[in-house]
Length: 221
Image (cartoon, rainbow, N blue to C red; front, side, top):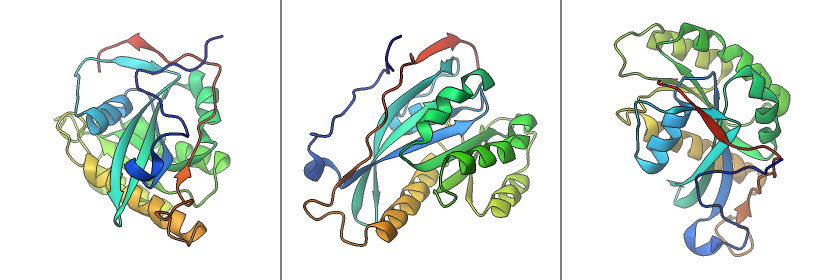
């Protein structure tokens, strides 16, 4: 079988760590199929949005630099398949993850109702204190099925931050990722109290090799 392939340029541990960023962290975007996970990643990383795109099969990832607390965090952002048949592939990605963005669509009530199940899966596969934020995507859509207050209440019940976003318009994405970056930075500060910007303190979260292919099936979303 083929190893994981992506449409991004990969980086190795001999990158210019001290020059380009203070540390790299692995971030997962989770949620049901067609909630806009790929659109969120592409809009945030590349400022690109396509109204008609394809369904993620397996995984894909991109990089984005986020500045928090005077430090530069290089996020390795993984877009994951939301379909149940790819769930076993997604579960292998939890290893090494230091932050999670959980997404539902405000136009799809079932994706909102499935948030609790995703939270349980996150807690099963990671430590219970991993930074997680909840996103209600497609906030620009006229056919809203989930109110802002509902998303906010669920996030409060799980003790996580909540944002509504529009991948199409770019609304709320910077705020959401910056908030996650700050949570991750604070968590790293708790575990590594020495200054991570000092020589020898740079962090790199190496991602596992997967014996799967990252492909996509055509669809219109």
